Amino acid sequence: MPTRDTPWPAGTPCWLDLAVPDVRAATEFYGPVIGWTFLDTGEDFGNYTMCQVNDRAAAAIGPLQAPGQPSFWTIYLASDDLDSTAKLIVEHGGTVLAEPFEVAEFGRMLVAQDNTGGTFAVWQAKGEIGVQVYNEPGALVWEDARLTDAEAGKRFYAEVFGYTYEPVPGAPADYSTFAVNGEVAGGIGGLMGAPESVPSHWIAYFGVVDVDASLAAVERGGGTVARGAEDTPFGRMATVVDPWGAVFCVHSELADG
Image (cartoon, rainbow, N blue to C red; front, side):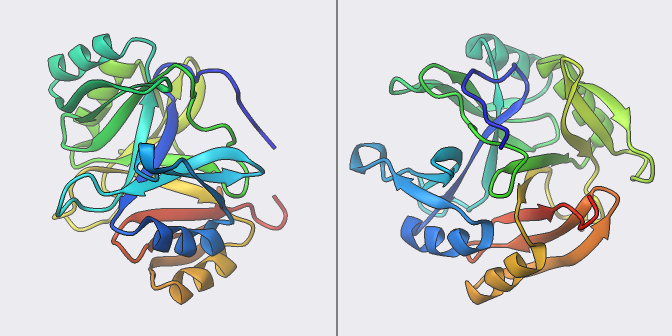
């Protein structure tokens, strides 16, 4: 099981969380779908609940912070200097929605939009690095930035986080992997066939043991399957929507992979 106990390199997707109107109901949905166990951090932290794999943090679910706030999975990118990152975001056409602030002794964070309107967060670790397990069932295995203007977005993330890009054979022409310090860390491109009305966004891929079993759990739990399971050169995957409207993908290795 790949695990990590030291801060992630700057620019790496290092955490993700979901805000919902009913945290308990969300744990009841996601437990069977992803295979998580849960740890409630208590009232002092708004019952922010850790999603765990073998007692290691994989993600979190918390309450909505404002009435009418939409539910979606927020991807956090690592930073060694949050204040400098905030300046770079603005200098290169992005918007800081929530200025840098302290999260107890755990770290500092901000919330921003890139120059195409895609929302993300940034995390500077202190006591908590973010994701402690990865590339395993129950953990984050991939993430895409799906943008209304892929080339503009690539320029933004290169200038702010130092991303470098490589095309992916067989993928849409505007889709590339992005790398941090030479290590591939995710994908970035256009909206991947979504309607033009869909705004720029990041989407998380969670590893699961069995995609088809997870889809059945999604439907039993009141979610919907937006794109059914299909085998690809990169594994078996599907796109789903939870009961609160948050979109995510599930992924498993192919039987021979």
